[in-house]
Length: 114
Image 1: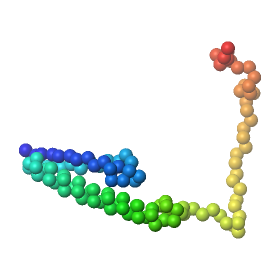
Image 2 (image 1 turned 180 degrees about the vertical axis):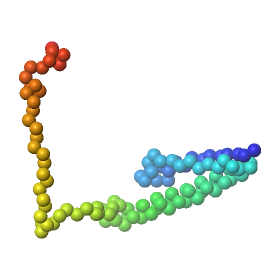
Image 3 (image 1 turned 90 degrees about the vertical axis):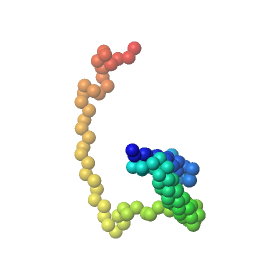
Image 4 (image 1 turned 135 degrees about the vertical axis):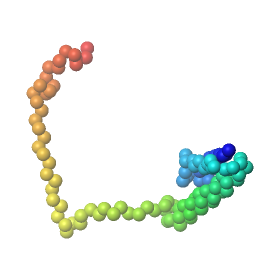
């Protein structure tokens, strides 16, 4: 008989700013005994908690080292054309005229509101 065991980690308990709603499920389903399954899951949970705490500490250190108190993101790779490079105008299609039947004249009786 194979035993299974599952543990849910609430990441908001580690760092609410980084992971306000995220959770992670860790499970084992091929253990020979319930105790073995629980021990394997506990070992994996301890590893994942260490990983998430390290990520949280790294994010806090980056936040504290940035001058504005926020984590700086890289600048976008798109650069607008400079003044020395002429920009070609975008050709647009002319707007078609409004048909006379929809020009606000008489509306059909099913659309009239009393």
